[in-house]
Amino acid sequence: MRGSSQSALVTGASSGIGRAVAGRLVDDGIHVLSVDLEPDPDGPGEPFKADLTTRDGNREAVEAALDSFGSLDAVVANAGFQHVSDVAAFDEDRWDALVAILLTSPFLLAKYSWEALKESGRGRFVAIASAHALVASPFKAGYVSAKHGVLGLIKTLALEGAEDRVAAIAVCPAFVRTPLVEKQIAAQAQAHSLPEERVLEEVILAPHAIKRLIEPSEVADAVAMLLGPSGELFTGTAYTMDLGWTAR
Ligand SMILES: NC(=O)c1ccc[n+]([C@@H]2O[C@H](COP(=O)([O-])OP(=O)(O)OC[C@H]3O[C@@H](n4cnc5c(N)ncnc54)[C@H](O)[C@@H]3O)[C@@H](O)[C@H]2O)c1
Image (cartoon, rainbow, N blue to C red):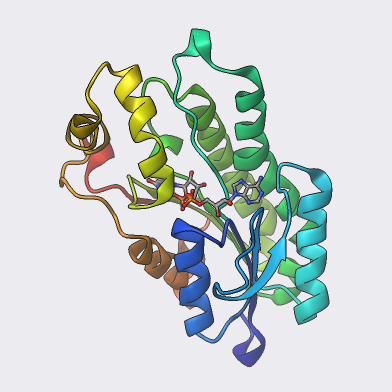
């Protein structure tokens, strides 16, 4: 990234991981366009409203970053949501929306920003994927499928970007303390036939070898490192931070 004029686009920047990433990058002196369906004028970075389940939303977000900063060194594709349901009852519109936000949006963001990332000379395309890019859990067909897909996209981008020193990395955290996790407790309780107060320990933390949630700031630390000079070492990989989940 270029000295004093570094710039980044972060999606899903109003909440949870995206907000922590945007805040950390701003603290590091990077110009950040904070893209969200519900942008927060009081949040870190320059707020920009876009529905990233649409082609126009993704194109407009990249155009806005280039208009504001004149260049783009990094994209952090983070926006997402979860839907918990067994496959027979899985709502087809929710499937389409999950694929749109978790897989198609990163593809479109990469497509529209690619020339700018190449021009950067040390461009970064980071997707906040998930441990669910590597392993499955029941009742998450749409999320797990899209997250496995985005890891494939990242590997492809790494190969296509290498000559121009564009690095692409999929960050793969276990469960992080955010509204996305809080919102799934009721649905997990229903799917697993458990009272809500047992969901955290018996469902959410069950696959973690170390029994704690990750903090959003810890994911932001990882992204900051990946946007730094040594980040390119990780191109094409799943940067796994899963408290031992996939060691089993
Ligand atoms: N929380 C976890 O345990 C966890 C673990 C691994 C990976 N992730 C991934 O991290 C990313 C962020 O998750 P989070 O937990 O911070 O969630 P969150 O719910 O706290 O924040 C998600 C943000 O994305 C935005 N968003 C949703 N749909 C959008 C759309 N159509 N257009 C624009 N913005 C939209 C929301 O408005 C929200 O601000 C997601 O991709 C998620 O899959 C989360």
